Image 1 (spheres, rainbow over the protein chains, first blue to last red):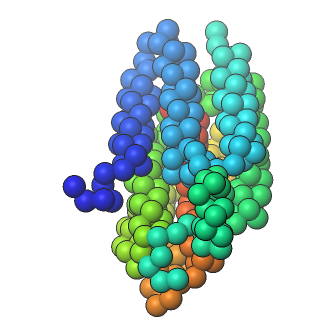
Image 2: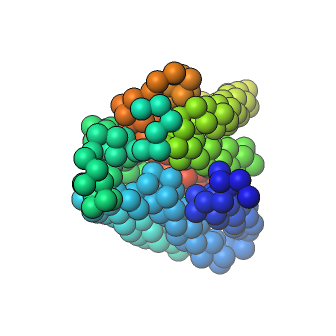
Length: 92
Length: 204
């Protein structure tokens, strides 16, 4: 196989595309109100999983110094916690 | 250092150190200061949006129904694919800079596709009378997506310069550093859209 194709980043790209499609599917099929909260919370978690993949592999944080990894990881964790909390606070 | 299989850090590192020091900041550290600042500002935007959404959930849900989720997912897939093209380009550039050009050009094409899609999306909204002043949801919609679009356009300029660097006869270690820094910026544009898409289009 060609060297540009056989790489971890190709797998990450495919996984991100699948995760995006799953988010979209959950987002457009949320009619019963009882499912909304679970689907939306899942969408937030999938979003941060994709960010973890992109920042770790595409932005090459996996090979970056710990200081930079900790800064970006903290940003992601804090933002994910804030978004989940603010979303869940307004649930009926 | 033409066709040198090196990263920007490797290029000016003594051979002895290369084997020990594996950790490497992609691009110049100054670029990362800008990226981290951008991440904090957009993070605050997202939190403010969700806070205000909590004050009037029904208005936000009703307004969200007018957004086209299909355009949203196409744009997300375009940016993800462009990010993969860019990371592949940088990987190729470390072996041979001249092989990176086609990947950067493909990423540029995806970015242009995003801008065209956004243009049609804005046009459809404005035609139905939905503007920045319609309500709070659309104010955030236009401001956030507009700021992101500005990042995409800036990123396209950077990609164009990256492509130019891959055409040079004798690129140096600074060229590789610029490729890595520019790539990091483009990936951040992707990351910001990864949050904006569910936040504006999908959350119910």
